[in-house]
Image (cartoon, helix red, strand yellow):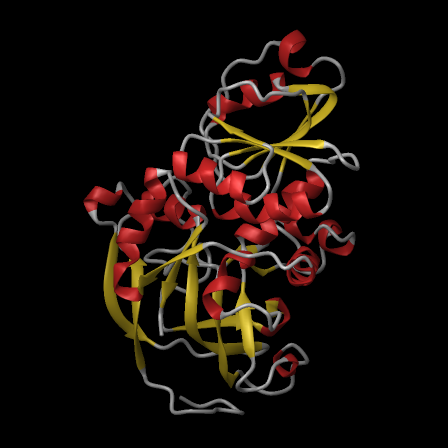
Length: 350
């Protein structure tokens, strides 16, 4: 492969998992294939993948919960690897990173840069945005391409497996925490406790919030308490105190009424997922009156990523990961689908 700044020899083909036909995991929607190594274009870099986090959005893409945006897409958007080649010269985005630099590739892959959202610091709402592992091939592969402007520098204190979940789970959890508008020292409810929630809980506790976790898995509840949550119960249980704010990480719309009812007057519920099952009918007096707020989280900005990575390093956030061999991607998704997860899954590609 050509490209200025090429380091070690780059093969012409690579191993990758592709979503051949979205559907239930029992129908084996993923196939393990040999495909050409992608070539970086202008402003892009080629990354040799070391690890890739296993995110719930990968599950939604694989199972068909989200519409197909790229046929036979390679999923994965919590990618850690080494820059091995640049695209054509002449772009400042390309020269941000040298061959040999460790970088992260996250969910947000590109935006138009020109619309009113991009120009007002809300690039996550850009209607022309594209996403890694959905519109663009992702990290369930030995190599991946990323626009240099959308790659992230990674803090030195995390190894490749430990930093991978921060690149979506951490970033989205951080944005959700901001959207939840927790008052200083406030009480935060977290519904669902997987990769994103276990990072968010650590940040919240470190910032002086009182955290209450409501999730179905016994292992997840135990981890929540170990990480500093004051209480841990089932997702439809009533927390021991009224909540100032809450974040719903579980993709279960039927939990929304329970979370809203658990809020104190003036409280906010932020729904963090890209996919949510139908929300049951709400009762205005029980669920929304008293100036309660129901809001959502859509993707993230690059600034969110930069802030989260710096904050995680400063607060010494510890990601709890279960590593899977690259060849076991379907098993990792099956574990995630079962629900009682401890932290986050990570594929070890090399």
